[in-house]
Image 1 (cartoon, rainbow, N blue to C red):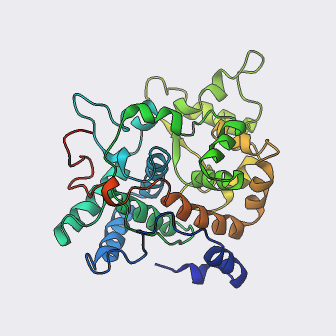
Image 2: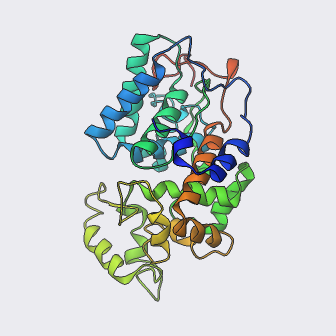
Image 3: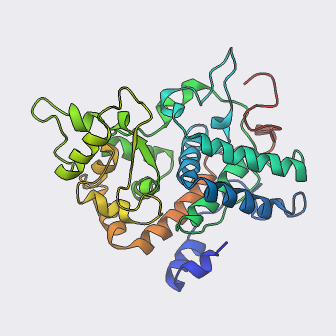
Length: 332
């Protein structure tokens, strides 16, 4: 994989490598599996590349899964746990029901290969974090370092999802409220840039097309031609809930800064996206990233490393699961 050094000019490299915050937990290291699973990087690289080449939407799927996992209980693979007849897990609430199957499949494939090579060594949380990094780089995004040594969480509960995830209908003020978790306003705007790849189901933005307000059925913030195109695309979404649209209509499969450029043109698919271009607290960062892709990439690399250590589990606070969809202990 291309190193950060080859991607950034000297000044920006200084900002990334020198001003990065220290690791959240001293137990994490960048060479955590060097002795216990020497082929870890090779297996991850090959597995992820094969999946992405076969299914080009994998990068967006895994990035979304990573966000949803980290924002609820931290980056501990708790969103991977399947429900049982007696207990609903993080995968069950409506906000997670449509998480793409290709994302889970990517982690399962990597875990299976790693278990054959080095049984009971590599956590599902580390697999998800590294898969996300690798896939972002594969579709044109920045490379960044991922410290390793996370443990898999011991709890996965459906009730913890709703209060902890960003929603597509959120105004900028609610997005900004997430700074209470230790992320700045700029970092939240940066993380939203992950929408440069991926898609959203019509039901998540249909109200902007057909039932926005008493005076206007269509959200006036939407570009009129764009709105008409979306109406045609989503006209049967109530009969077919799988109908969806790319969040970045211009370059949906490439990780770039076009997502931010779209917002100024009324091409923000989700209300939460468009809101950032209007709120004075977030607008300056949207404008910065729209005109300067290098600034976006530098910021994204930094905040992704920070996010990857958010509320992680280490030592006895977690475990290394035998299977990523099942906690080793009986109670989940």
